Image (spheres, one colour):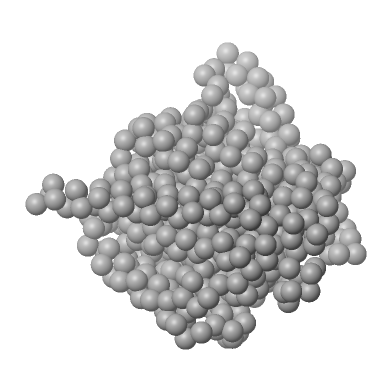
Length: 472
Length: 38
């Protein structure tokens, strides 16, 4: 891939800005609430910017789906998610803010007990390990700079550790804002240049299979639901919770998520159509594409002039980095706040907790780095492992928020273990039966999340009834 | 230019304008906060 000097300059400028933010922002941190939640002072604009940018981690993956299947990408990666965001905004956001806590395991302790906090913290940590994103950062760097992927992985991780350790959540939100700017503008810019080069709907109709232009993409209902219902992830996403806790007042989370949905909608339309244009141009023999996964990069470098290409490429790095830094901090909070302070050293001071968080940032990033560097074959699987966190946490969290009757802590712990265990079993058997494309073949074609959720719910209901009867 | 192309361009323009508007409000908030502190 050919990148001009001026585009490299823009990417370099972005890293200098990140460095400056990391250097300056330390002055704003005066205590643990500053370090974890920016002093609970997030205003509406910064709430929206940090939520929108953190949530997007895989632009190349979205490009790949659009390239291969067309409009159905919007249905499965957009529409279903908007519905769940809406539910979150209307029924959860304010409750979370009002609880004035720090993490999801905090909620589990509030609803149940310390054992639930402990088990929940472990699953939470699995969900936020940034290994898949650190891995894709390495790939992006290797394409941009022609270096080995491991070098990119190492550089990106050390950089993120630097500013996250110095500024905690303050560094996270300021860098998120910068990343938000590059992401939105970079992705939007491609559309007019693509249309100018290739034309409108006619070009797509002539050069794409007809299924690319139907909303279901020729997929079966089950396939669509399998992808679409992964949107439940949102309901137990630690990043969503952290931003709600950090909002300045009770009204900001709801309003902020509703505004963020508008940004996601506009953004998703751009990404879906860019992927489709890449496929159409490739089919027409007008664009050379190495693989579906890098098709987004190919079309960007083909249509964008220098400077704008630099903004787009920086936006691409920004989408991944904004997720890695947030996940790294969240993983560190799991260790320092949920386990160290919450379970093992309840009497530790704020200073000790903060020191532990800084150490945990290095541990979390280091752990993800090792997975990304040495076990690249399990990186994709780790993403699926992340979904096991949903199978574990969704039922006890939703019951906690919406069921006002008596709740058994034993039911919570057992449902988390049963949900995650069932999903893990499903996952392992799937990976033991790969098809000719190397994709796991699950029992009954069901993604591991669904049997896990079902088991979690059944166990919760049964144990809760029995336990509560015994307790009288 | 057909209707779909036109809608796509409008989408991209609205996204850029919304991003710039959010940036404006964010900087305004930051400036206000600093002003209050003084």
